[in-house]
Length: 118
Image 1 (tube, one colour):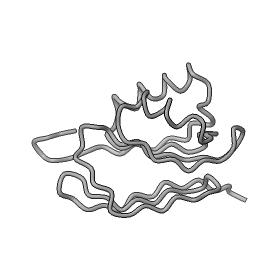
Image 2 (cartoon, rainbow, N blue to C red):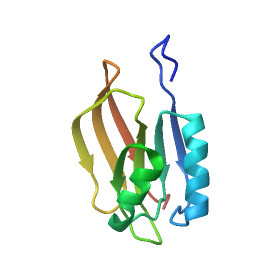
Image 3 (tube, one colour):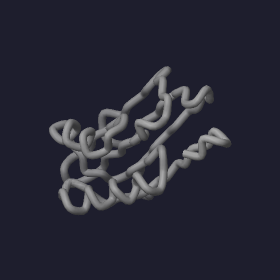
């Protein structure tokens, strides 16, 4: 984050499945270098992995799970940002997350969406 300008970077990436430890850790480490707020699509996440992914990120994680073979989105927010969640809407089918938040005194609406193209 550029503290002088009070800016933060948002990165969005279709990860095409990150249940595998090596691929996930590589993508998470890359993401930590590139952004402060990260949107992942096609995570193939399920509720049983939340605690592990939380520890790997070291920040706030918001999940909308699909199955271990399809769908799933998440939003990762670095611990460096002063975050307050005002409202959240999380799809139960792994298609979207909508967050109304306040970061660094700025109010934002974040939406991470994954829908098929057909």
